[in-house]
Length: 467
Image (cartoon, rainbow, N blue to C red; front, side, top):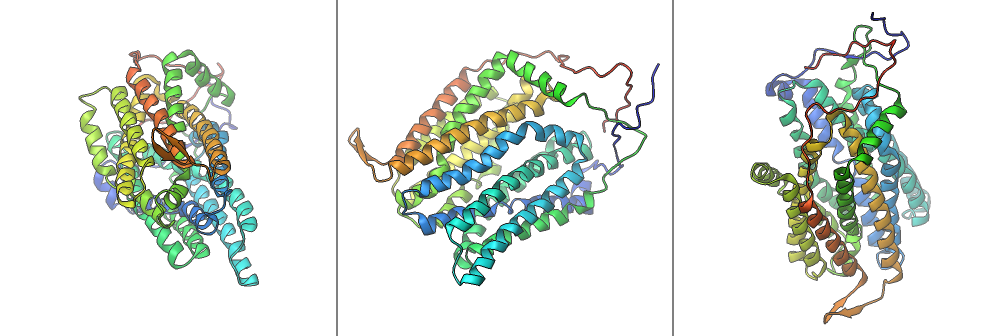
């Protein structure tokens, strides 16, 4: 006998605004605003690059500059490390459209709070704000902004999955990556241009304006999820959901090995946090080149996507990911020895393309042996592992680059400084991760395997139909 669900339980349903054809995705006004909002969202992180350029341009010659740059990177990674286990589940429980909207509004307000003190100091004292004023504000903004960024990064994917027809979801989920690739090319160049032409404070203002534009573009989606008593979506207790996912991960040797590979790869890749100093010290170029280098990592991403898709039918995913890691590690080692801008620019662009291509393989790799309902929890576990690697490596690299700032030594007949030595060490870790990837054996998973957390017996639930 079924009983009516208690009135205190959350009830959600979706309006019949699901896109069923590609025409709906590009001609419907709500979806047009959605894609425009994603594009504007790609420009809101300019303030991170602008802050790095400001530190390098004013304090790049100081021995403690690597420590400051590393700290700004570590603060954001630490926030991701602490909050990623909760973000995915909260988005599943909360209205996705409103979560995305509120996250972008808070994002715009935070960047505005960063801009106001910087401008006020300049107006009151007729000089730019010192590091002692900017840095504490930047730390607070980075932490809070990273928390909002977790929601604004995951919620668009959840919205697409909710409001598109099942036959369109696979190809529709590619569009955010394409938009991110385009903004990834333009955003660093725009940030460098604004910083060079208008200065630090105006570049911050533009970043806040893009966040506001993104929030306004997501407004049409705010009523897409309505509360009604007709269809009920009930989740098991929160802690039981977490423990079910944790038990599954711990009992799987393959998942543990995969997390180890992710950890090694992230450790090797995190040494690039010192890239702004590598440009000024090793390449003897201006800090503005940093934005150009970051743009090169996005150029060619669409081509890489096509190449990876064609290779998936010929190679095993783990083997293909291993080849990508090994090639990326070799490119990083060669890049570490560069002293001229042009070859460094080419190598960094190739390395970014290979890394993005390897990243495209990770989600299909997860789908091979992680149950669909546990994918978000394993992604959260992956974020914890990668965050731990980033925090440890960035802190270590920043510390070593600071205390060994003026140290040079000879190895195999070549002169090495702290930064290119750290880069070479990181490349070896990436190559090791690639070798482990190629040895990874993924056992076949039964189609009906599923781990569930039982609900109380007295509760009967009517779930929304899947489109």
